[in-house]
Image (tube, rainbow, N blue to C red; front, side):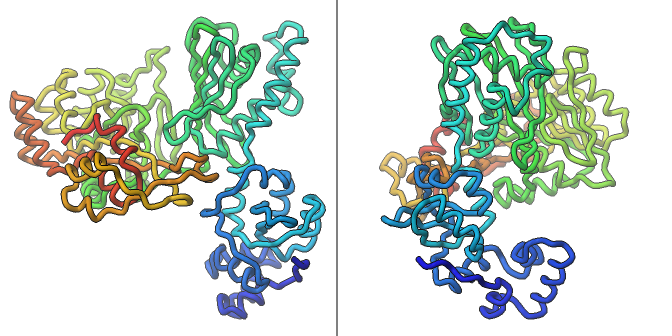
Length: 568
């Protein structure tokens, strides 16, 4: 392909009637004042979208426009261009055309970048235009650190073989991110974990090796394996970062620290535990840059969402969210808090640990070591004139009774509980020793939830359910199951070959209507469960999961994986 000509973006957009002359003049004026790139000003001002700019450039230069969201990149081709240069020139190698490489560029009119890329690749270039924001996200994802991590682990192993005994007292000051192999290895691990959207990093000593695994969309994936001898150095460095006792190896410890990974600030919650072959470390990664999802974006069915928003406007009562660990309960609670977080309301949270920091909310960290328990902090919070209280978990009878009493005395109380479904939750409160009248009068709604993986949009393809799967769908959805759109991901670079990308909530809600309240005062739990089930009208976890399958959002296999925990 011949070298592209220099083009003027503003003129192209005006010629193609995507921009008016007045808008161009306004954007040029802003560019003189701010020095920002003209294309960014167009997008931020709402004049055009990034895709419209890319498509306009492609038409003008008569080259293809590639939507990277649906393009399956190949690691060996991407690696032809070093990551540093890919970021610098906003470019990515897409295809080998035989004698030339197709390269996607966000700004194909950058002639200097074109020449430098051709020099680096030592080959002719066939240009394609790509959207800049999607390109940068793709670069974050495709330039994996697996090879680098393995190499750094090997380097660390060699260093430790010849190194003298580690001085615990000076390690924290002598190690540097730039020079120490252990720090470089951890930095690469964090960067790779963020790039693939990992929620947890597991560092686990086995009998003959050290394995590092990432939890992505709720499923563990092996990242790398290395020599077991590097494990103590990794754990030691992490303990120093978390402010833990580096001399204590016999007892579990918990801590937290922040790390900066490229443009992201990551809050890391660390847990260490002694095992047979050394200390195992698990780190929960909370990326502060991603922020919280709004209540409208957590995947709750519209009818249920309307009811929940009505409950949130009530001055008192208790809202419980139930489900196993890792089912998204905290996200749902904080989305609800964000919905009502105004200067007119005082909100206090009691948590262990504080997972999200929200401006305008008073958040308290439970510290069991100094007897700062849920119940004690909750009782203190009630003396702080709150309107809304969030209790991280209803762990014992004292916390349950204090929370229910607060809901009875004019406070809106949010909390979580570990139960399998919504209808059994009030019964569980009674089993924990809560007075029956308190449960009946205080509880407003119970939300039970799970998370299912979502089919990757980039590689989704029609999929015909098996006879057994159709039977399950028909049993839950009835005749509407035949009208479903069933999809399955083939596996691509976007989803790391899994066919799934991201997760969605699956919900059911028990509203404490008058018949349900009356049944709660009944001595027979079976009668309450019957009335509560009738009130839900079949809108259960199982039903919502099957609905997502029929809408092409997830697969039958994924929905049925947790179906044994769901009830009708």
